[in-house]
Image: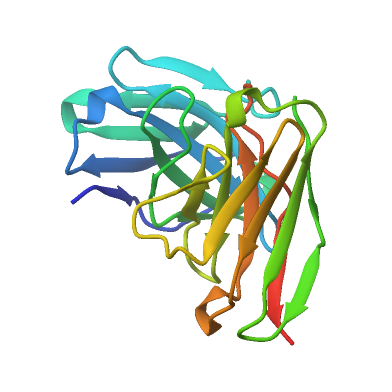
Length: 119
Length: 108
């Protein structure tokens, strides 16, 4: 069974750093893209970027380039999304999702990680 | 960046009725790289349709997708109580892979 299991909810202060994770199982992690999607409270879905764990090819949406870092450790089938300095506006639910190929729709999604940034 | 505009913003219908949701792109979507998702409160999105018209695994046949170029439609032929949710379209033919703003399907 394909599963993407994300790390738990986080509460952070502005200016702090954070790294959340997404662990894949039940499939060959290295040959599927992993994407990250943001959903701010009460709002829609926003595409942040994606990574190919096999060679760490990473593509960012221009809106998120320089704001976050996407990475992966294929040895433990885990992808990451990290911030070096959080802002209150980073408060959101973050989902990871698997893409069967470069031009494929995400078919499996993680359960989401809620990040709350508040002083 | 391709902008997707969904209409209507909210659709109020009764169980058993037919729902028609629209997604219009600011430029042509390559090779029908258009997907539809369903999202219920507190849940992750669920893939319904990919390639504009192909149903994902396990999706009932009351869900159908159509369209090409800049105009796409999701149709739910006969609404079941569990279909009331928010629906998003997404294009994945041109980076960044953008989403529409969503259509909320609510019980009338």
